[in-house]
Image 1 (tube, rainbow, N blue to C red):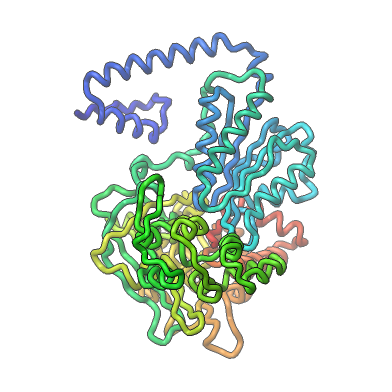
Image 2 (tube, helix red, strand yellow):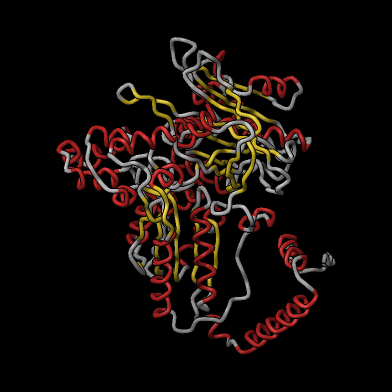
Length: 604
């Protein structure tokens, strides 16, 4: 049964809320609709009674718990929403906001401040929290002696600066005088249980602290970008879409040192929605040959039974589908060293942390075991490994131009250890084992911090070497579909023009038809002196400044550790030179562009 809810101009509901309501109504029987109307009537009466009975002093005296999510891939945002819901259920007054929307200059007015943050790149905060981080680390940071706080950090222990952003925020808030409600948590990639325990502890602490909790606050401080598209609700990390691979095409030349693939995936009338700037989550399976090699090294058959989420599963299947066996970590090295008691591994552990980190990064799990053989049982092996996690790839298509498809651009990780060929877990799966028409499990990870300007007349500058070009292909498809009049400028770089010019024909078409106003290319290996995109920025600094003055939005996509830092340094030099500013003023100017959404980065 379908009943259309009339959309009146005077409705206080947002279009997103109306869409949610319509979805629920479409699924209800006549009897259920009658029950629902009574339920909603009861809620409205309860709310009115609460408004009448809540005294002015309670409204004033009860502190609001502010939750700020600083997310890069959506995990921190998801946990913040879970905490917000839990606080409402516990009858606290709470406010939830994304870091990019947070008015951080008033942070000292917070009575209770909860930060859930991830870490990106070389220990930096996520993009949407950079402005908050720089403010807190500056001389402008206020005294926070009247505030209490808690920090939950999300990270990946395989990286050297594990959860560095959370550690820095936690220490700085304490230095500014804020009271720590409970100890910071540094969560690894499998964080669900850790977060659940933390939420319970936090609510216990808050219950003791807040003596007059309000009953269900009637306002919800989500920005419009916090609301997920209703069409995407059924597809997420835990409930992926089972789609079909349409195209797997290598787009680098035969002589290239890189193997870059263009993949097109059929959404099969699924109604899965995405926007330019979003990422595609891809679940993968490990290489059966690598699994076999690992089993042989440990004298296991693969038929041994292990328990996964309460179910008995053959070890071979567990290693192929459920556990990470390509990326090593310091924790895995330490745990395996205790089991094997191999002198070389013990030596790595006894060295400084930096040496151990480099060993883990450069030595895949199977090669660690090859160098330090041991005999362990199946459950022990599973116990030291990490669960598989999906990989995220910038979407390189616009749904306006590709209604039932999604495209990604993937750099295939290939290397060798002692003459043995190795590939990345996900990239090897996509390039070598996934065939056209095979099923692939995917979901969309929204990235509201990497969006085209709302005004189609706004000029944009896109800086994306290598596969960093992916989202800009989506941007151009969208701008062409929208007939956007804003100017478009691309900076792209790679080793060689003839082998590595990704999507060359398409960019040439955009130049020819006038959609792409300017294009600057940097080929690092085509001449004696290496040339990178930051060099092209230096060479065009005067024109870049003119575009900035005209209101241009600047986008950067690619490597966080090297390229993104060099590009930011180049942009600061442009501002210094043509803005007649000192370094502090230039940094403040760039930070203002960031908070205005005019300087956005998708770096990894």
